[in-house]
Length: 221
Image (cartoon, rainbow, N blue to C red; front, side):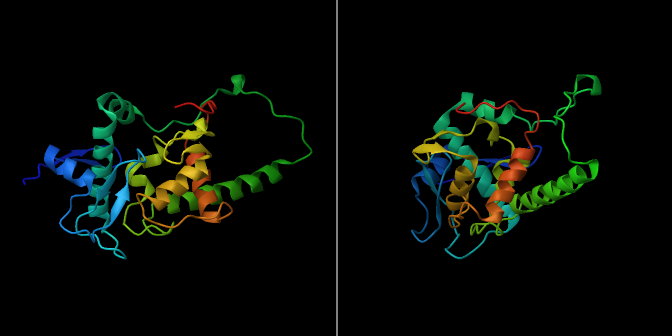
């Protein structure tokens, strides 16, 4: 069987377009050996074997990026071109740039400018830690070499403003942290993190920070 692979450069990463026969085989799990690691894809139903990846091994970043692209192409095949076009069209949200005249005054408070500076410093440290974890293939417990940014560069297509909402992958109404955990367990093949794990909370803080100024729409799909 011949595999046809087309690489396309994108803003944050490369999409790898598999040939139709290769894609069908990968999604079914038809690999050269049953011992290859198999991951669940973002539709919560399909699975894909990663050829040559054995349990306990971690892919080099370049190959892991290719695998992330293959996962997205498998999702594309299952969801159709219309949803794929929506996915590709979304760019990370830019921070709100309201003019001083349009700014809404804050509530009266006894806290000083120094207090707020210290709080902002702590917040920024937390978000920076989340950024580091988001871009690491191992620090969240992943074992495949795939990191969050490979499928969701700069937090794109995570839509934190739409949670809580029903997620078919989990078969329940979920919070953003639940979906982060799902991705850790499935594409990254790691272990479930406790809800109070500082790593989980830091990644959630980072993703939320990428959507500053976006209106809340709980339940939107």
